[in-house]
Image (tube, rainbow, N blue to C red; front, side, top):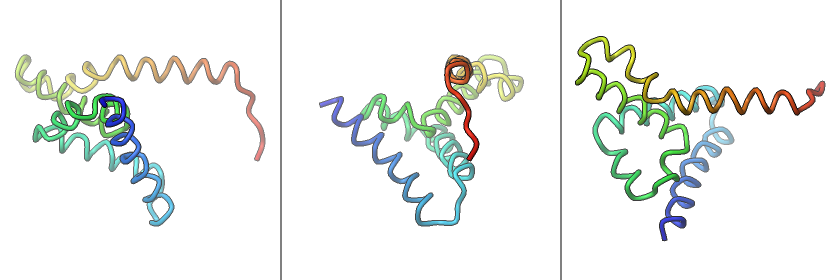
Length: 117
């Protein structure tokens, strides 16, 4: 049942993004920023944690999950290090995901050939 909820919740989040691309004048970059900010807002109020408990990877993999990780990292770093945690917490918490994105992007660039449009 966990897999079903992860699929449905993650699919719903991604479907909403696709609908926003198709039906509005918003650019994909603005939708990306909107999703990250929404994840930060929901994470800062503790709402996103409940969604993660319910949907697992369906809530952590989309961009809203990245925003939640940033908010959670900042909150923990501020509690531990004070005001310096505002600047260090988000990057510390999300460093694994950022590193993986850079690594897999690099590997993809090594094996893919670019084409002119």
